[in-house]
Length: 302
Image (cartoon, rainbow, N blue to C red):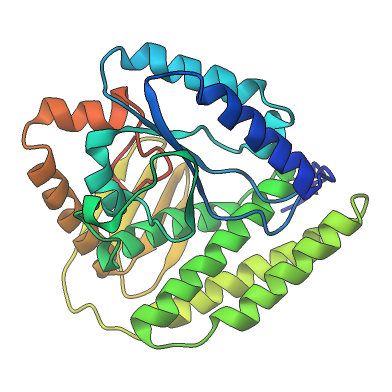
């Protein structure tokens, strides 16, 4: 995997100016109740902004969504500060928020702040496993990437892989996170301080190291017997296995995931069906409205 040098040297002030522009302009619209930010800017020039906007209702949703996205896209350095669009939910969705997205390090930028009383579902083991599954697949794909790969995207993904390792430390009683995170942070510093440098070799070594750690963590827990298979478009096939791995046979890609991830997916789908008992609401939630777009799990498209 060859890294494409696409980093920009931005300061924390550049991010703050972007946020201030967004908050100032969004707050002028009376259909917007509040604006939130997930996480913090720990690595200016690498970190991206993750914004959630709470609207008063889903009435005229398409128009509201366009207004929000146009404001965000007009902000200074928005083309770089944002790696994906905002999460847009209505007031009634707040109680489901932790079912789809962790609220750790969530802060209110403007409007009505969240209270724990409003959130009914908690971000637990099922959500962690689904989070892991998405980033596992992304990282496994990177092993076969033959073209120049965005250096910034790699640094964002490898940091998320570190979070999966941290999650697994808590789930499987291991202790790999801090050492791996230190190496991730070290590479980030090198890349942003030397924009002309080529850190492809170090990046590949770190990616392989992270995947090997994940494999060690996953194998510590026996899932028992059973066979699961999921077919997705783009010739992706997910098969349950004792070990996390990836295989390519002709034009098909086989992702081997421990059985617990298929169990988590089924449990997640079952719980979602309780929230949205009819298929129409379920499909609207994930496809038409584009809400909670920051969360994906295998076999379930937004």
